[in-house]
Length: 284
Image (cartoon, rainbow, N blue to C red; front, side):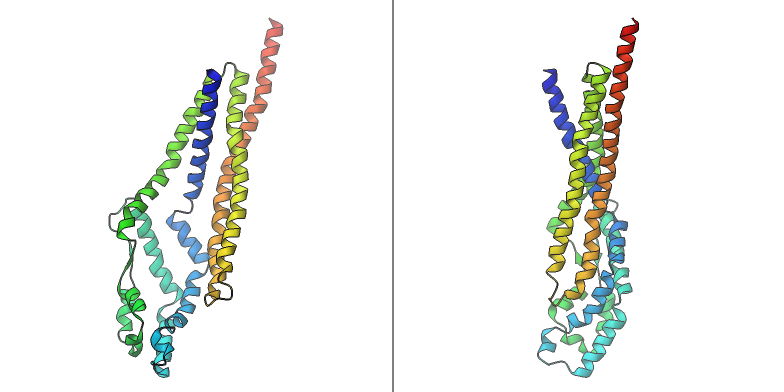
């Protein structure tokens, strides 16, 4: 009965400890500062700003030759002047901050990304009425999360923030029970060592695989842009995404590596405990 209970506790510890580390590592990505740094370092703002005039010029009116060339040039100059990488960064970063504050429950106001200031300036441009309905909608309607998905996103985020702490407590309790259930100190140390060793080794392997799988997925996503009309986004998008699995894997690797070191230390200590016991028995 004791052996079966020990096996069950090992299984519970394996899953609770592994999920705790995984969610803790993933939470690195779900932080406002991290998202803003990745967007800034990837130069995605500049890429979007540089391509925006060409994107807008693909409206149906311009393809049909309905926009006079002089108006078209004036409009492209206006877009290049107003919609810069710095402008986009100034719009997106507060939106990111507001989004994470809302997700964490610090505010009840749903975040929105608005370009109304740009829409006001565009109304003064001769080419404003040549813009497509989609572009006008983006400029005049604040971007928000879908109403039906908001609470799901919010509850999922808050659960992911609480999960590492709760699962860590569960793991510590289960590991303590495993330790206390063992009959002697040698068995206590070795069982605790084994309980840490299994998830640590498998976790390090998973961390390595995550880097490989992440690079493959990012390569597939960015590779699809090569040769397309969005080819200029290939490098900034790759720079934006490729570091994410690496950062998550490094955090996982550090924690699992520490767990493996503790496991090794406990296993080595079990030999010294055994020797002391035998010495004491001989003296008696």
